[in-house]
Length: 263
Image (tube, rainbow, N blue to C red):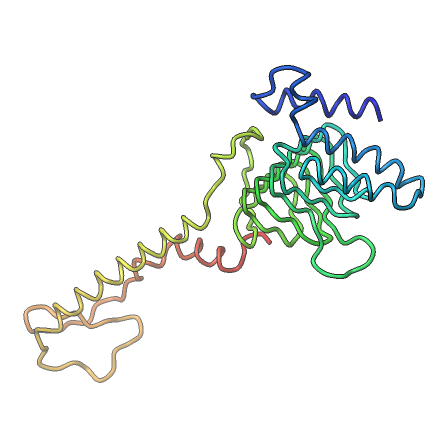
């Protein structure tokens, strides 16, 4: 246990540029204090001691704002930054080198018995306010964006953003765990695609209204599906039909967003 606590202490200086000296970390970092109390409470919980482990957990919650059930399994070199509002459930498992920010919940989704909380792999980053709920598996090297709600399994080496959480792969690119500004914004991409589609439809509508002012003398009753009628100078002609300009890669982005990409 002592070696694990020392590892938890050292990782703070690697992950937090505001950490200046050992005394400040020891006295002013609630995440580290909560982990210290939790590891002692978890040891008592494993021994089967009643009440006292939960009481220690309650005291830690009062002092630090971090609530960790004594039954939760926390790996080494875990850093809970700021900590306020963090909740980690009884059957949750957090892998080594995890980075958890304030307001994170590793919780359940109902009154299930047995394993009902998430399992996080190694080197997982969970952004501020994110909720990871249910007995799901979060792979190693996963980043969960701030405010995301994750309800399904996530494979390793992925980034999850949005509500509900959607996977965005970052293959072939190394991303540092503290670079939260580089998280992709799938909602913004979809909104941009929808705006582009609306603009294209408006242009088509305006063009159609302009052409309809000049009434053609006659239009064939039957037009093959691969042809369309084009009006020019009061005359009509059958020309090959072209694909709508909005039917491009943006449609795929919208479809993936609505279906929940990768999840």
